Structures are given as C-alpha cells and as structure tokens.
Length: 127
Picture 1 (cartoon, rainbow, N blue to C red):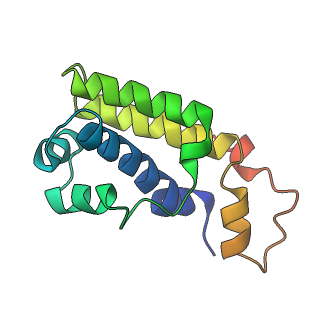
Picture 2 (picture 1 turned 120 degrees about the vertical axis):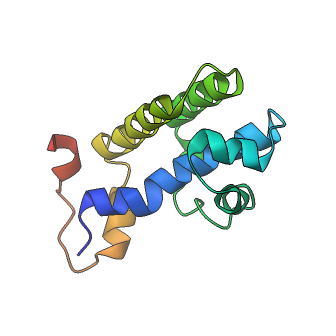
C-alpha cells in the first residue's frame, strides 16, 4: 500500500524536476551537466527528464499554479539567483501544492484500487 508521501516521491517530485530540467535546457540553453549541478542530479538523470524517459508519469503541465511555481524556480536558477536550498524549497512547495489540493487522488486510486479512496482527505489534512 502506497502512502501519499511515497506516491509523491515516485511520481510528483520527478515530474516537477523534469519540468524544471526541460525548461532550463530547452528554454534557457543550459547544458544537461549544468542543470544536473544546479538540481543535485547526474547528467544522465537530466537526460532522462529531458527525453521524457522519467518524470512524465503525472500530468502536472496542465496545472496553472504548478507551472507558475516551476517557472519561478527556472527563472531563479537560470539567472544564478537560486542555490540547492532554493531548489529544495521550490520542489517541496510545488509538491505540497499538488498534495494538499488533492491532485494525486486519481493516480492513487488507479494504483490502489482495493482501497476506498472516494472520500479520502488525508493529503488535504496532513501536516
């Protein structure tokens, strides 16, 4: 049984990282190695994000507020105004938004069909 934090770690956070990595490489012309250094990842991980081999499991590109948060992180990173701690904060805030606004529920229901998640509010009420 996946608890919401596991689901977030396996799907949401990689998707947000992929959004950031792709935008830094494609929109700002940074190398995969530079992006890897910024995000505390390997170049191979960034390559997988950019090529959608990882981080494409969750449809967050459609969520306006998540896009706004990602754009903010990307602009700060591309402008040299953000460091590793800023990345952690940004990922945590964006992931928290997805969780507390119950945007993982559909995926969670698909992965845990035996659980009655119809009226679940665990993510909205979790600390």
